Length: 458
Image (cartoon, rainbow, N blue to C red; front, side, top):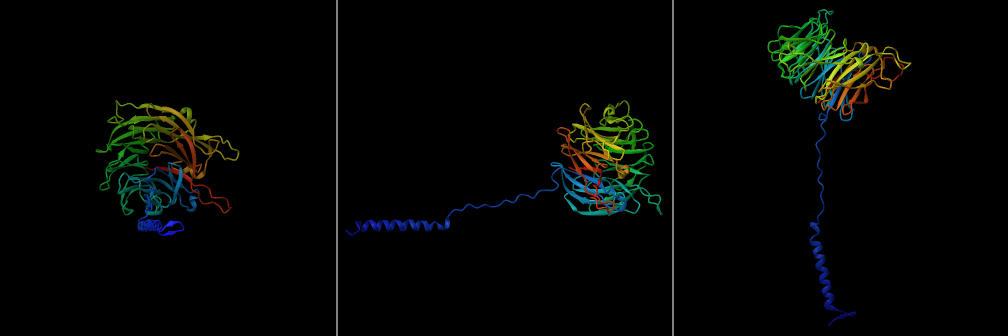
């Protein structure tokens, strides 16, 4: 037997053989060693149009120096400003396309309409109208056409008569000019897109327009000074309000005839259609009341139909009160009434008169009044008047977000928009308008613009 230092050669050979076998096994598996592999999954990019939003139209305080206005997009979930787009001069009113992907804004002082995508505020299309058009109202329930009411200008040579411009959305070109009567101040299009109704304040009429061929039917007499019109959800009725008499006329959209009338009192000046509950709200600042009518009654407004109990705002509105607007949450639970009135200025540096702005909450089920919310910025509960706002068509405006979580109040004199959280009906934030252009070269910071209208997004 071979022995090396007391170890047999046989045992040594066995140990070497075992080591070589183990080494061979290791080498054989070298190429198959498992290594965890992470394959990145790229998420879908966020859709800028997917969240709920509101659009706030603002004028530049230095409008006479040809400075453009703006539109601000607010993300409802966080009350954050996510985009600002430059509009034309003197923007006054706007509308969304039915799918909420396009915005159209009437710029009254430069005879243009601004159009852009709600997901891209950098690409603005400016649609030019004839000089002296003075556009002041935009509406659409169609995907292919937007309608713009134009006041015209009788002082020009030749004069520009009042008309409605039909804009084809695919090309952003005015395809038709539709003649209407004096001072077309408001419009409503039926939800089915078949008829457009134009309120002619100066003529006391409503002009029906057939949207298929843009032809005009005979004007409908509705009073001496109509100011507002709304369409019912089923497209069978529209309602026009005459401010001088306070009468509301129900118009049959098939015959274009008045089929019922009611009154909200002399001086009624604002009409709102509550789609969730199929109601009509009519504001009358002279009586400090909101009249309500059940629009589901047909023929609506005709005897023996009687109005619902009125909402009396006397306790919260005060002397000289202006009812500036009404909105209803899309879930139908509550209505919000916007008011403002002149008050003594609380701050020594403010130039009188000052204005106090409030929102009164109405429980829609029983029309009972809830809390009243002061919405002016600061702790004084008021703001001094701003000269450019005295002529604004919507000195204050109110709109509810599509998810019913917020109500927004634009405040021209304050240069901001208040956000009300509807879960507890509490004002939570003042959203400043974009900065304007300084009116002088004194080096002061530019003032905020003045909000004049809100478009509730989806």
